[in-house]
Image 1 (cartoon, rainbow, N blue to C red):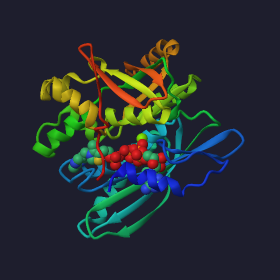
Image 2: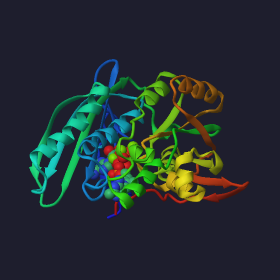
Image 3: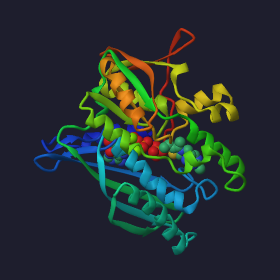
Length: 323
Ligand SMILES: Nc1ncnc2c1ncn2[C@@H]1O[C@H](COP(=O)(O)OP(=O)(O)OP(=O)(O)O)[C@@H](O)[C@H]1O
Ligand SMILES: Cc1ncc(C[n+]2csc(CCOP(=O)(O)O)c2C)c(N)n1
Ligand SMILES: [Mg+2]
Ligand SMILES: [Mg+2]
Ligand SMILES: [Mg+2]
Protein backbone atom coordinates (compact mmCIF):
# COMPACT_ATOMS: atom_id res chain seq x y z
CA UNK A 1 0.00 0.00 0.00
CA UNK A 2 1.32 3.44 -0.93
CA UNK A 3 -0.58 6.20 0.84
CA UNK A 4 -0.51 8.78 -1.97
CA UNK A 5 -1.20 6.27 -4.81
CA UNK A 6 -4.15 4.89 -2.86
CA UNK A 7 -5.65 8.36 -2.27
CA UNK A 8 -5.26 9.18 -5.98
CA UNK A 9 -7.26 6.07 -6.88
CA UNK A 10 -9.89 6.75 -4.21
CA UNK A 11 -10.33 10.19 -5.78
CA UNK A 12 -11.92 8.51 -8.83
CA UNK A 13 -14.97 7.70 -6.66
CA UNK A 14 -15.74 11.36 -6.05
CA UNK A 15 -18.47 13.13 -8.01
CA UNK A 16 -18.32 16.81 -8.93
CA UNK A 17 -21.05 18.85 -7.27
CA UNK A 18 -21.53 22.61 -7.08
CA UNK A 19 -21.66 22.45 -3.26
CA UNK A 20 -18.23 20.78 -3.05
CA UNK A 21 -15.72 23.58 -3.59
CA UNK A 22 -12.68 21.56 -2.53
CA UNK A 23 -12.83 17.77 -2.24
CA UNK A 24 -9.93 15.33 -1.95
CA UNK A 25 -6.54 17.01 -2.38
CA UNK A 26 -6.19 19.75 0.21
CA UNK A 27 -5.85 19.83 4.01
CA UNK A 28 -9.62 19.87 4.44
CA UNK A 29 -12.76 19.82 2.33
CA UNK A 30 -14.60 23.07 1.62
CA UNK A 31 -18.35 22.87 1.08
CA UNK A 32 -21.13 25.43 0.72
CA UNK A 33 -23.04 25.89 3.94
CA UNK A 34 -24.87 29.22 4.00
CA UNK A 35 -25.08 32.48 2.10
CA UNK A 36 -21.97 33.90 3.78
CA UNK A 37 -20.02 30.88 5.03
CA UNK A 38 -18.32 27.74 3.76
CA UNK A 39 -17.92 24.65 5.90
CA UNK A 40 -14.41 23.20 6.39
CA UNK A 41 -14.18 19.50 7.35
CA UNK A 42 -11.25 17.21 8.01
CA UNK A 43 -10.41 13.94 9.71
CA UNK A 44 -7.03 12.62 10.86
CA UNK A 45 -6.23 9.48 12.84
CA UNK A 46 -3.52 8.61 15.31
CA UNK A 47 -2.62 5.03 15.93
CA UNK A 48 -0.72 3.35 18.77
CA UNK A 49 2.63 2.03 17.54
CA UNK A 50 2.60 4.32 14.47
CA UNK A 51 1.91 7.84 15.80
CA UNK A 52 2.63 7.23 19.48
CA UNK A 53 3.74 4.71 22.06
CA UNK A 54 3.13 4.75 25.77
CA UNK A 55 6.80 5.76 26.05
CA UNK A 56 6.47 8.82 23.78
CA UNK A 57 3.20 10.50 24.82
CA UNK A 58 1.54 10.90 28.22
CA UNK A 59 -2.12 9.88 28.19
CA UNK A 60 -3.33 13.48 28.06
CA UNK A 61 -0.88 14.23 25.20
CA UNK A 62 -2.47 11.46 23.10
CA UNK A 63 -5.81 13.26 23.29
CA UNK A 64 -4.25 16.68 22.80
CA UNK A 65 -2.37 15.51 19.71
CA UNK A 66 -5.34 13.68 18.15
CA UNK A 67 -7.25 16.98 18.14
CA UNK A 68 -4.23 19.23 17.42
CA UNK A 69 -3.36 17.49 14.13
CA UNK A 70 -6.89 18.25 12.91
CA UNK A 71 -6.90 21.86 14.12
CA UNK A 72 -3.67 22.18 12.14
CA UNK A 73 -5.50 21.18 8.94
CA UNK A 74 -8.23 23.75 9.68
CA UNK A 75 -5.47 26.34 10.24
CA UNK A 76 -3.95 25.43 6.87
CA UNK A 77 -7.24 26.47 5.23
CA UNK A 78 -7.42 29.77 7.17
CA UNK A 79 -10.57 28.50 8.92
CA UNK A 80 -12.09 28.56 12.39
CA UNK A 81 -12.78 25.18 14.05
CA UNK A 82 -16.24 24.84 15.69
CA UNK A 83 -17.10 21.20 16.47
CA UNK A 84 -15.37 17.81 16.75
CA UNK A 85 -16.30 14.13 16.84
CA UNK A 86 -14.09 11.33 18.16
CA UNK A 87 -13.96 7.71 17.00
CA UNK A 88 -12.17 5.26 19.34
CA UNK A 89 -11.02 1.71 18.58
CA UNK A 90 -9.87 0.29 21.91
CA UNK A 91 -8.12 -3.01 22.68
CA UNK A 92 -8.29 -4.85 26.02
CA UNK A 93 -5.05 -3.41 27.35
CA UNK A 94 -6.58 0.09 27.73
CA UNK A 95 -8.45 0.95 30.96
CA UNK A 96 -11.46 3.23 31.16
CA UNK A 97 -9.64 5.74 33.41
CA UNK A 98 -6.81 5.94 30.83
CA UNK A 99 -9.26 6.79 28.06
CA UNK A 100 -10.80 9.51 30.24
CA UNK A 101 -7.31 10.99 30.82
CA UNK A 102 -6.87 11.07 27.03
CA UNK A 103 -10.14 13.05 26.84
CA UNK A 104 -8.83 15.50 29.48
CA UNK A 105 -5.92 16.36 27.17
CA UNK A 106 -8.25 16.75 24.20
CA UNK A 107 -10.59 18.90 26.28
CA UNK A 108 -7.72 21.23 27.36
CA UNK A 109 -6.97 22.07 23.74
CA UNK A 110 -10.64 22.21 22.69
CA UNK A 111 -11.36 24.76 25.44
CA UNK A 112 -8.49 26.99 24.34
CA UNK A 113 -9.92 27.27 20.82
CA UNK A 114 -13.65 27.05 21.70
CA UNK A 115 -14.17 23.79 19.80
CA UNK A 116 -17.13 21.70 21.01
CA UNK A 117 -17.28 17.91 21.29
CA UNK A 118 -20.54 16.84 19.60
CA UNK A 119 -20.22 13.06 19.23
CA UNK A 120 -18.16 10.09 18.12
CA UNK A 121 -18.08 6.31 18.11
CA UNK A 122 -16.56 3.59 20.33
CA UNK A 123 -15.60 0.06 19.21
CA UNK A 124 -13.34 -2.73 20.44
CA UNK A 125 -10.10 -3.52 18.60
CA UNK A 126 -7.81 -6.58 18.55
CA UNK A 127 -4.69 -4.50 19.06
CA UNK A 128 -3.73 -1.11 20.42
CA UNK A 129 -5.63 2.15 20.42
CA UNK A 130 -6.72 4.15 17.40
CA UNK A 131 -8.22 7.64 17.73
CA UNK A 132 -9.81 9.33 14.77
CA UNK A 133 -10.98 12.92 15.16
CA UNK A 134 -13.24 14.78 12.74
CA UNK A 135 -13.31 18.57 12.95
CA UNK A 136 -15.96 20.79 11.42
CA UNK A 137 -15.14 24.43 10.98
CA UNK A 138 -16.13 27.48 9.01
CA UNK A 139 -14.76 30.32 6.94
CA UNK A 140 -16.17 33.29 5.02
CA UNK A 141 -17.40 32.23 1.59
CA UNK A 142 -14.63 31.60 -0.99
CA UNK A 143 -11.86 32.73 1.38
CA UNK A 144 -10.14 29.34 1.99
CA UNK A 145 -6.37 29.27 1.51
CA UNK A 146 -5.63 26.46 -0.93
CA UNK A 147 -2.50 24.51 -1.83
CA UNK A 148 -3.25 25.34 -5.47
CA UNK A 149 -2.90 29.15 -5.18
CA UNK A 150 0.88 29.56 -5.67
CA UNK A 151 2.04 31.70 -8.63
CA UNK A 152 5.35 32.51 -10.29
CA UNK A 153 7.19 35.29 -8.41
CA UNK A 154 5.78 34.35 -4.98
CA UNK A 155 7.90 34.17 -1.84
CA UNK A 156 7.77 30.79 -0.03
CA UNK A 157 7.48 31.15 3.75
CA UNK A 158 7.40 28.86 6.78
CA UNK A 159 6.34 29.51 10.37
CA UNK A 160 8.27 28.71 13.56
CA UNK A 161 11.19 26.29 13.44
CA UNK A 162 11.11 22.94 11.65
CA UNK A 163 12.43 19.54 12.69
CA UNK A 164 11.99 20.02 16.45
CA UNK A 165 9.23 17.43 16.75
CA UNK A 166 11.46 14.76 15.19
CA UNK A 167 14.27 15.82 17.52
CA UNK A 168 11.91 15.41 20.48
CA UNK A 169 10.80 12.01 19.19
CA UNK A 170 14.43 10.84 18.93
CA UNK A 171 15.01 11.88 22.57
CA UNK A 172 11.85 10.09 23.67
CA UNK A 173 12.65 6.90 21.76
CA UNK A 174 16.11 6.77 23.30
CA UNK A 175 15.24 7.94 26.84
CA UNK A 176 11.49 7.36 27.30
CA UNK A 177 9.33 9.65 29.42
CA UNK A 178 11.68 9.58 32.41
CA UNK A 179 14.45 12.07 33.04
CA UNK A 180 14.67 15.77 32.36
CA UNK A 181 12.32 16.84 29.58
CA UNK A 182 13.85 18.89 26.83
CA UNK A 183 11.95 21.71 25.02
CA UNK A 184 11.98 19.61 21.83
CA UNK A 185 10.08 16.85 23.65
CA UNK A 186 7.29 19.35 24.40
CA UNK A 187 7.07 20.25 20.70
CA UNK A 188 6.60 16.58 19.82
CA UNK A 189 4.02 15.94 22.53
CA UNK A 190 1.99 19.15 22.35
CA UNK A 191 2.42 20.88 18.98
CA UNK A 192 0.56 24.19 18.81
CA UNK A 193 -1.86 24.27 15.88
CA UNK A 194 -1.23 27.53 14.00
CA UNK A 195 -4.83 28.74 13.99
CA UNK A 196 -3.96 32.35 14.80
CA UNK A 197 -1.54 32.48 11.88
CA UNK A 198 -3.94 30.75 9.46
CA UNK A 199 -6.69 33.22 10.29
CA UNK A 200 -4.34 36.19 10.13
CA UNK A 201 -3.22 35.11 6.64
CA UNK A 202 -6.84 34.67 5.56
CA UNK A 203 -7.79 38.10 6.96
CA UNK A 204 -5.00 39.76 4.93
CA UNK A 205 -7.17 39.20 1.85
CA UNK A 206 -4.01 38.45 -0.19
CA UNK A 207 -3.77 35.44 -2.50
CA UNK A 208 -1.97 32.90 -0.33
CA UNK A 209 -1.23 29.20 -0.89
CA UNK A 210 -1.01 27.27 2.37
CA UNK A 211 -0.26 23.78 3.71
CA UNK A 212 0.49 22.44 7.18
CA UNK A 213 3.59 20.38 7.91
CA UNK A 214 2.57 16.91 9.06
CA UNK A 215 4.91 14.78 6.94
CA UNK A 216 7.96 17.09 6.68
CA UNK A 217 8.82 20.20 4.67
CA UNK A 218 9.96 18.32 1.55
CA UNK A 219 6.68 16.42 1.28
CA UNK A 220 4.51 19.47 1.97
CA UNK A 221 6.41 21.72 -0.45
CA UNK A 222 5.96 19.07 -3.14
CA UNK A 223 2.22 19.10 -2.42
CA UNK A 224 2.15 22.87 -2.96
CA UNK A 225 4.21 22.59 -6.16
CA UNK A 226 1.98 19.83 -7.56
CA UNK A 227 -1.35 21.43 -6.57
CA UNK A 228 -0.26 24.79 -8.07
CA UNK A 229 1.69 23.27 -10.98
CA UNK A 230 4.77 25.39 -10.28
CA UNK A 231 8.49 25.01 -9.72
CA UNK A 232 9.62 25.97 -6.21
CA UNK A 233 13.22 26.63 -5.25
CA UNK A 234 14.18 26.53 -1.55
CA UNK A 235 17.33 28.06 -0.05
CA UNK A 236 18.64 25.57 2.53
CA UNK A 237 20.32 28.13 4.79
CA UNK A 238 17.00 30.02 5.15
CA UNK A 239 15.05 27.01 6.44
CA UNK A 240 14.36 27.78 10.11
CA UNK A 241 15.94 25.15 12.37
CA UNK A 242 16.29 25.67 16.12
CA UNK A 243 19.52 26.20 18.04
CA UNK A 244 18.39 23.31 20.28
CA UNK A 245 18.18 20.90 17.35
CA UNK A 246 21.58 21.99 15.98
CA UNK A 247 23.19 21.68 19.42
CA UNK A 248 21.80 18.19 20.02
CA UNK A 249 22.00 16.61 16.57
CA UNK A 250 24.38 18.75 14.48
CA UNK A 251 23.53 21.03 11.56
CA UNK A 252 23.18 18.37 8.88
CA UNK A 253 20.79 16.22 10.91
CA UNK A 254 18.81 19.28 12.02
CA UNK A 255 18.17 20.17 8.34
CA UNK A 256 17.33 16.55 7.56
CA UNK A 257 14.78 16.53 10.41
CA UNK A 258 13.28 19.81 9.09
CA UNK A 259 12.89 18.33 5.60
CA UNK A 260 11.73 14.82 6.41
CA UNK A 261 10.97 14.54 10.14
CA UNK A 262 7.36 15.67 10.08
CA UNK A 263 4.79 16.47 12.80
CA UNK A 264 5.94 20.09 13.16
CA UNK A 265 2.40 21.32 12.44
CA UNK A 266 3.82 24.64 11.34
CA UNK A 267 2.48 26.30 8.17
CA UNK A 268 4.27 26.62 4.85
CA UNK A 269 2.91 28.82 2.11
CA UNK A 270 3.48 31.31 -0.66
CA UNK A 271 2.50 34.96 -1.15
CA UNK A 272 3.25 37.59 -3.82
CA UNK A 273 6.63 39.23 -3.21
CA UNK A 274 4.99 42.66 -2.86
CA UNK A 275 2.81 41.43 0.02
CA UNK A 276 5.51 39.49 1.88
CA UNK A 277 6.76 42.39 4.11
CA UNK A 278 3.18 43.11 5.29
CA UNK A 279 2.53 39.43 6.04
CA UNK A 280 5.81 39.02 7.90
CA UNK A 281 5.36 42.13 10.04
CA UNK A 282 1.68 41.39 10.84
CA UNK A 283 2.71 37.92 12.02
CA UNK A 284 5.61 39.37 14.01
CA UNK A 285 3.24 41.73 15.84
CA UNK A 286 1.46 38.60 17.11
CA UNK A 287 4.75 37.01 18.15
CA UNK A 288 4.76 34.59 15.21
CA UNK A 289 8.04 33.96 13.41
CA UNK A 290 7.79 33.72 9.61
CA UNK A 291 10.85 33.00 7.47
CA UNK A 292 11.25 33.45 3.70
CA UNK A 293 12.68 30.10 2.59
CA UNK A 294 12.47 30.23 -1.20
CA UNK A 295 10.57 31.37 -4.25
CA UNK A 296 8.13 30.18 -6.88
CA UNK A 297 10.02 30.30 -10.14
CA UNK A 298 8.00 28.90 -12.97
CA UNK A 299 4.46 27.87 -13.78
CA UNK A 300 3.57 24.70 -15.67
CA UNK A 301 6.22 22.44 -14.13
CA UNK A 302 5.75 20.76 -10.73
CA UNK A 303 9.22 20.61 -9.27
CA UNK A 304 11.12 21.36 -6.10
CA UNK A 305 14.75 22.46 -6.11
CA UNK A 306 17.09 23.07 -3.19
CA UNK A 307 19.80 25.68 -3.41
CA UNK A 308 22.83 25.13 -1.18
CA UNK A 309 26.08 27.10 -1.48
CA UNK A 310 24.87 28.46 -4.85
CA UNK A 311 24.25 24.97 -6.28
CA UNK A 312 20.81 23.65 -7.11
CA UNK A 313 19.56 20.07 -6.91
CA UNK A 314 16.11 18.55 -7.37
CA UNK A 315 14.77 17.31 -4.07
CA UNK A 316 12.74 14.16 -3.59
CA UNK A 317 9.39 14.00 -1.88
CA UNK A 318 11.03 12.34 1.11
CA UNK A 319 8.76 13.00 4.11
CA UNK A 320 6.90 10.48 6.25
CA UNK A 321 4.74 8.09 4.22
CA UNK A 322 2.41 5.32 5.39
CA UNK A 323 3.30 2.11 3.51
N1 LIG B 1 -9.05 7.16 2.74
C1 LIG B 1 -9.38 8.32 2.18
N2 LIG B 1 -10.56 8.47 1.53
C2 LIG B 1 -10.89 9.66 0.96
N3 LIG B 1 -10.10 10.74 0.98
C3 LIG B 1 -8.92 10.65 1.61
C4 LIG B 1 -8.50 9.44 2.24
N4 LIG B 1 -7.26 9.65 2.81
C5 LIG B 1 -6.96 10.92 2.55
N5 LIG B 1 -7.93 11.54 1.82
C6 LIG B 1 -7.94 12.92 1.33
O1 LIG B 1 -6.71 13.16 0.66
C7 LIG B 1 -6.23 14.47 0.89
C8 LIG B 1 -4.84 14.42 1.48
O2 LIG B 1 -4.93 13.72 2.71
P1 LIG B 1 -3.75 13.75 3.73
O3 LIG B 1 -4.19 12.93 4.91
O4 LIG B 1 -2.48 13.43 3.04
O5 LIG B 1 -3.73 15.30 4.12
P2 LIG B 1 -3.29 15.90 5.49
O6 LIG B 1 -4.26 15.58 6.57
O7 LIG B 1 -3.04 17.34 5.19
O8 LIG B 1 -1.94 15.15 5.81
P3 LIG B 1 -1.63 14.28 7.13
O9 LIG B 1 -2.64 13.14 7.15
O10 LIG B 1 -0.24 13.86 6.93
O11 LIG B 1 -1.84 15.19 8.29
C9 LIG B 1 -7.26 15.13 1.81
O12 LIG B 1 -8.12 15.89 0.98
C10 LIG B 1 -7.99 13.96 2.43
O13 LIG B 1 -9.33 14.29 2.77
C1 LIG C 1 6.28 6.00 18.06
C2 LIG C 1 6.40 6.93 16.90
N1 LIG C 1 7.15 6.57 15.83
C3 LIG C 1 7.23 7.42 14.76
C4 LIG C 1 6.56 8.62 14.77
C5 LIG C 1 6.73 9.56 13.60
N2 LIG C 1 5.53 9.70 12.77
C6 LIG C 1 4.47 8.89 12.82
S1 LIG C 1 3.27 9.36 11.74
C7 LIG C 1 4.19 10.65 11.18
C8 LIG C 1 3.71 11.58 10.08
C9 LIG C 1 2.41 12.21 10.35
O1 LIG C 1 1.37 11.24 10.32
P1 LIG C 1 0.17 11.34 9.31
O2 LIG C 1 0.74 11.32 7.91
O3 LIG C 1 -0.71 10.17 9.59
O4 LIG C 1 -0.50 12.64 9.61
C10 LIG C 1 5.40 10.71 11.82
C11 LIG C 1 6.47 11.69 11.56
C12 LIG C 1 5.81 8.93 15.92
N3 LIG C 1 5.12 10.09 16.04
N4 LIG C 1 5.74 8.07 16.97
MG1 LIG D 1 -2.50 18.89 6.25
MG1 LIG E 1 -4.76 13.49 6.80
MG1 LIG F 1 -3.43 16.38 8.60
